[in-house]
Image (cartoon, rainbow, N blue to C red; front, side, top):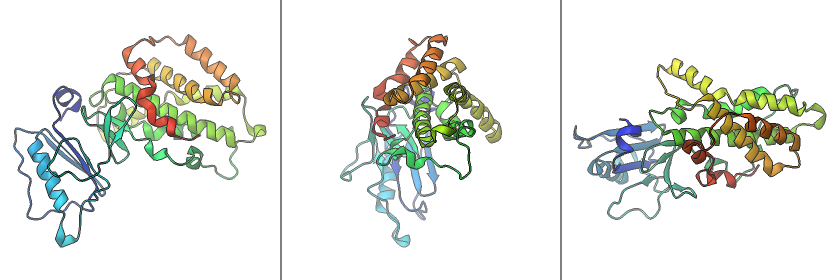
Length: 301
């Protein structure tokens, strides 16, 4: 299945996400035709079923909805979503809709676009609590000297090829995924620096250099994971664009705390002004459009 080519340019008829307690269905089979493409994924007790056939998707949904009496196992009606109409639909479905009007089904830390099947990271889990609650310190650490490691740690989980592979996502979504990863990193960076004692903090030039190093992690991690998992991800976003997106994200986040970071923002703005990219490129304009990252402005930092 090639969501980036076949499905994005056709009507994706069915996408279903649900959270039953198990996937054992003895005596029941789905009627799948070789004319259709079907994909069923499971991560622990989270299932997602994608099909180009509405009939097959309806069959899967009906089976999950009936449950498995022999095992006292039933679908959790509070944690599911589907992007097609069914008779007698349950009263609520789990979706995320951003300020741009795009609708996503959340699944296992991902947001899956209901129309294109493009994949983004789900940052809504950071809602409701201050992001500093996700920051850890080790006793005896010297914060200034561990800054580089911390910045890389903040980026690493969001450097998976799934978000940047052009076989899966368009260049606009790849750019958006990079930008959002940098937004989160910048928010965590602020919380980490705020927790430092001023006496242990390094110079702004030192901190600026560590930020620049962290902006180059995406491509490196993609190659490392690609080699380890024997996959061949394609990153069409060039290094200059990645760094520009990172600088833009840090400036965006730190400007809201401007009184603390005047000198650092000056260094970041000076770097982005000298950075040779075409910031009028459609994929970069799309990435930094606030409407596509509206979930971030509900995060407390």
